[in-house]
Structure formats: structure tokens, C-alpha cells
Amino acid sequence: MKILVGYDGTNSAKEALSLAKIHAKALGASVAVVTSMEKGTEGQREEISEAEKGLEWAKSLFDENEIVCDTHLLIRGLTPGEDIVEFAKENQIDEIIVGVKRRSKVGKLLMGSTAQFIILQAPCPVVSVK
Figure (cartoon, rainbow, N blue to C red):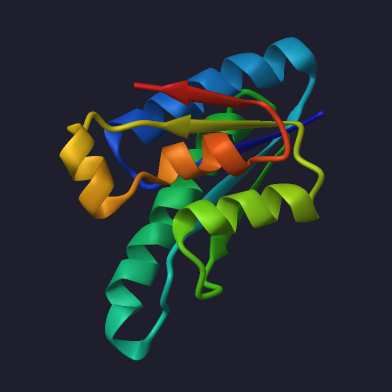
């Protein structure tokens, strides 16, 4: 079994990592921790470096529990929701775990919702964590 966690460094994403650890232990699953950035230009070098550090930290959580974990920084010109759904399809992911942020209906309308997109478009079950 393969579990994908969408990770962006937020508290809800950290909660998603915690749940993924529980699911992976219970199911004997491997975990893919994915961070998606739409662009990776020269001016965003610091953001890319921070994302890589976050992924290293996330991997250490699984390593200390002897859970197989791979990390992926995706910079493919897609929105984070599109990137995660495509990655799940390409890698035959069995479950996606994402953190959700509280937003008003107007906020979701104006800014979109990565979690909402993933929940509606994913090829597998999605667990959302607050």
C-alpha cells in the first residue's frame, strides 16, 4: 500500500504527517511526502531550499519509526492540487492525506482550495485533517 501526504509546512500538514504515520504502521504502507510549487525560478531559490528542508524533516519522522518514506518536491507548472492528483495517478497511490485550512466560502471562491480539488479529483480515497 502507498500513502501520499501533501506537505506545505502548515500545522494542518503536520497533523496529516502524524495521521500518515499511524496509517502506515497499521497497514504496513510506504509513504510519499509531496510538496508542490508552481514555479521554481531563480528568485525562488530560498523558497525551494525551505521546501527541501521541510521535506527532510518530514522524512525523519518516518525514518525514526522505520517506515519507508520518499520525499518529492514537484515543480512542474501545475497548481498544488493538480500536481498531487497527477502524482497519485502516476504512482498508483492508494490513499492521500491532506491538511485543510479553515476558510470562509468567499475565501474558497476567490482563492480556491487545494484540498477541495484533491478530494474531488483524486483517483483514490482522500483523508482530510484539520
